[in-house]
Structure formats: structure tokens, C-alpha cells
Image 1 (cartoon, rainbow, N blue to C red):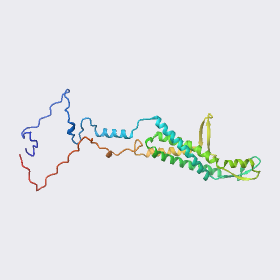
Image 2: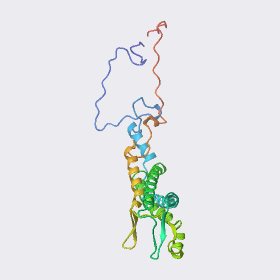
Image 3: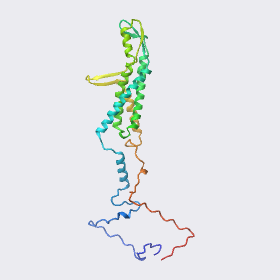
Image 4: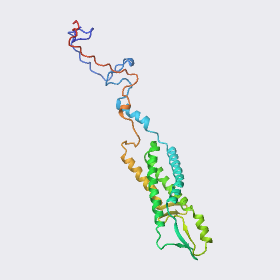
Length: 276
């Protein structure tokens, strides 16, 4: 044996033999599963690194399409957001000022020629509705992480569309009973106040069945759609859902032994090994 020929069974003077030609009927050589694979090679049945990474991503992050589950998610989000319209309406009624009126023989009239309170009520509802839509889009983006995309956008838009009329009706009815009572029983010339209401928005009924909001009742849905679209456009993941880094996966299967490290070079003063 010499340093140029580390194989004990092979003579030094034996030249390298070329590989035999491969015929169509030749069967591939069987590989011992217990022998392992060399670095950069793959054993029998072991997929390449790119295929393993892709399959791992599909198993962890690609869910089968379940229309019923997506529909249940949207309906649940719409009902929850519609219920949030109640505190939104209470907040609007607390911030929007009441309008002073005077009782006359024909009914109630404004106590001032050009009151600013109705405009302020519309402005407060528009600001609160727009902020509500932005917060809803942010919340659904992080809460419904597995449903990011059209399902999340649909839930945000429909939920805010349902919450806006609820907030309007809740806010305008606070103090409305007292106003109606004074309007019916107060003598002419008595001053009182009218609760906040909307003049730049409302609900129309399509064919007498389908409610269609308009005006500033659409601002919550507008804010939610814009914010959700911006979040989707700025997302660094093509699928809009967080994906693992490539280092999180191992390209070597559990049954493949790790390659051995290369031997360290001998020290300068080390004894030279005996030559065969």
C-alpha cells in the first residue's frame, strides 16, 4: 500500500477500467439502505432537496379547500362585527352634539338659523366609521391568518357594512324617546334638543327586501377594504401567510448518516507514515 494507492486489494500497476456501457435491459444496481448516501447524493426513494422543501411547505401551509368552513368563517366574522356596531354607536352618540330646537305649532324647528351640530354629527360618524374599518382590517389580518386573501377581505367588508347601520340606529335612538315625548307634549316656544342623526347617509331598500346602505355608512367598509388591500400588497409572502425560512428544514433524511469530517492535515513535525 502507498499513499497513491490506499486500496489494499488493488495492485499499484493496475490501470483504471472504464465503466461498462449501459444497455436498455440493464437493471440499476441495488443500494444497501444501511450503507447511507454520500454528501450531495440521495438514497433510494429519497426526494431531492427542492422537492422535500416544497412538500413540507404544502403540508404545513397549504390547506385543502373547504367552502363550508370558509363560509362559516365569513358569517362568524360578520356577526361579531355587527355586534361591535353597538359600542360604536354609543361612542358616536357620546361625541356627537345634540341640536337645539324650538317647539312651534307646526312642530320643532332649529333654534339657530344655520346650526353646525348636524354637520358635526355626520363628521364624527365618518371619522369613527373610517377608524373602525381600519382597525377591523388590521385585526382580521392577524386573527384570521389562515384565511388571508379573498376570504379575509370579504369578511372585513361585509362585517363593517353590517356594523355601520347598527351603529347608526343605536346612536340615534339614545335620547330619541325623550325628544318624541317633548315634541308631543311641550308647549309652543319651549326649547329642547334633538339627538344626533345622519343627514349624509342612510339605508335604501332594494325591491323592498334588500337593505342597501349609502353615504357615510359606506366609510367603514371603504376603510377596511383599503387597509386590507394595502396589507396584502405589502406582504413579503406570496401566499399572504407566513412561510418558514429555508434553514428551518433539513435536506438530509433522518435515516441518512451525516457525512464524516475531512481528516486534519498532519503537523509539520509529525512522523511520516510507513510506506508499503
